[in-house]
Length: 546
Image (cartoon, rainbow, N blue to C red; front, side, top):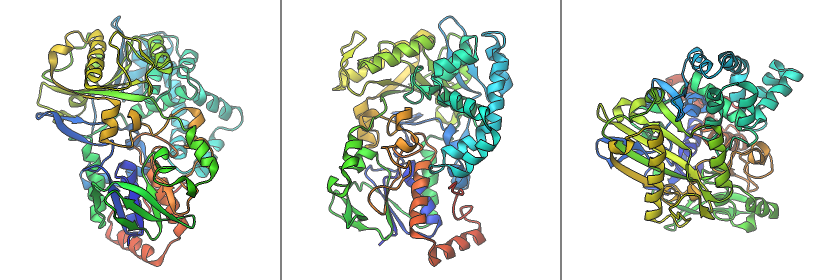
């Protein structure tokens, strides 16, 4: 009988299992798919010469996360690779905003859009230098972030603290207008905000866009050398070094609850796995409450709250194997790993408004990834492994374009949407279609079939909007991983602090389980042995903030 059962071998589940194993717990990790990794996987399914990431690709949050750093995954084979530039946002008039690793180079580029914008960028960077470390500490630890919060309060007393809070809550459009005279800085903020489901007019979008820009300059947008799956492989190898095996093809259908406490799980093939100390669920909140845990074991308010749970946008992704580099019309994008494709902030607003109305956008905003530019091992020299994704409504009421795409997401719907995506790339890179050797289309239904956590093509475990963050995530409560069922912990992106490959929800759940169980002698002995042998860094991983 293991001490803990972890449901799901996505990055959060694997992080949770690693931290528990570091404390001497025996852990059983059960994964429904035939391979671990969740949304952190790669393959050669587009073309045998090209490695493509199935889901996520660039990992600034992983590189910045004290949780991931504390696992010392470089000791288990993980290395990072970077493109020459971080992000580029071209316009059809030939201008291009480029986010560089060097803040001064970014500032020089933005100065070309409008005099004074370079200094405005440096001011944003200086503010980040003052508060960034504590802001990340507050983001990646359980709520409330006592230590990081107190340090932030000490650094920003009185009006300065209120000004920072206001800045963080601004919509991306407003923050850009207040900060920059030209289009360049505004594009970088708004484009990065739409890495989540935050439109240019949504509160918190400016703060999120600023966060992503600053991470781009401090840690870059790195990729695992060899493919996203290399990050998963390192997490799994680290677990194996601690005697933990990930069991794939084991879909959990029920959390066993008796007398208000989680005692284990049942799988689709009828196996019951009992857990001595806890069950940690790396699944979306609506999959846990009312599905894995029957409503009879939950307070009535939870049913009502889950009914109000808001998913983030659905997603369509296209992977390509290109026989040569993308023929960009302007120089900037050729050096960037990530390229944002929309002809200005107004076009971003138009895109988001169409989604809000239930319409498939006719000119979708694209996040475009050049993986060989970021990691030359992804495809032969002179070629490119590329992808683009865009968002679409979860429920489609109409198509703003001419193709009649519907929520059924038939194969024809997917191909028509991929053609539309390629047409957007052609606006900024004439001749792009001529470079395509092969492509793969992942619709919202395909994404969910490949990873059940991506329900309806949602990639962030629920909206990033302010009304579902902090104490409101996933439902109004404490903002912590504990659930109404004792011994059951939510360890997915539906929990604080949300989506992104940073491991914080998994780490927070593991810490909560450890705290509830206390420090038994066997765990302390195991931790001491690891300290003496130097295996796996510190026994606790990163220190809890509260």
